[in-house]
Length: 424
Image (cartoon, rainbow, N blue to C red; front, side):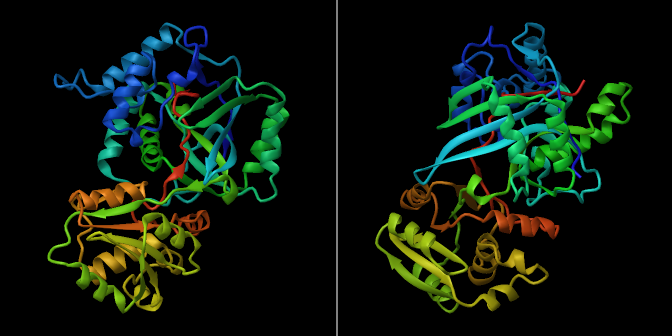
């Protein structure tokens, strides 16, 4: 565990597509309508037409976003817009980006991974929802391909895997683009000895899903269904899916916080909220959003939030963790230590009686947007959080528990469209 495998990826033909940065896109689930329109305009062969085709008013069961994606995919293959690589490879993928003004080089690799049908070897940290899984399964049935890699983590404390990957740097990257504020480079690792060494090193690793939980679950469903299919190649290939592997070193990973904007708080007023929280949190006023966020980052408290309501900012530090723990019975100590768990299960449900369903809570990575939503009356109160630590994610996943939704946002996302894995 895990069983990884090189593959002949399908890549954009540079004779047909001169600028690869114009045809890649973020993962489908972080593409809002405005960005989707812009990606459509950017290039006629942008991968968004495959991963998130537009919904049309005239859609039917036989002509819809999924069938259109399938037609585009087959057309691009037939016209050599997408071409199969000449040989099997593990694709070494680096992203250079800035985190709080400091450059970070995140080096990983894209390969196939054998699906874990037992659910014990590849560990999730989020629950999945039925609607996104139906959506991705409908798409997968039409394209019969992994259009984007899921994002997984593994431990590499001795950097042995990284040393193998860096051997690919002897050659020039075949993809070298700047996209979405970061630099993306891709090399082929083709030496059989290097690939065998990589497979051996990865054999004993635990794998944690960072991003792509819905696509992973869909791949498992598709694999079960493919066993009944008459095509042997599909049955064999469906046991694997494309994944982007990154070592779980905190220095190579950036997890952004996801702030909460609450729309309906019933009859609660600011003073009532402060009174309810005051017995369990120390409360300090903050002069500005930037000062509040800085104090949150620098706080030594094990659980800290920012709160904005009625034009006022507050720093909240949990001082009664046993009380919070009692409100989250039947959960592990690691799960109870999560800031998002304390916020949703202790603050929202236990102390304030705030509904945590039916779209009552909106989410954003931008603390300024959270504050503005309150100022504009779109939300009544906003709560700002620190990011979840990678060590917390792994600890909870190992216990088989799932975090509250929107607990993590790994940045930057791997680009879709760099490599595609065709299943038949």
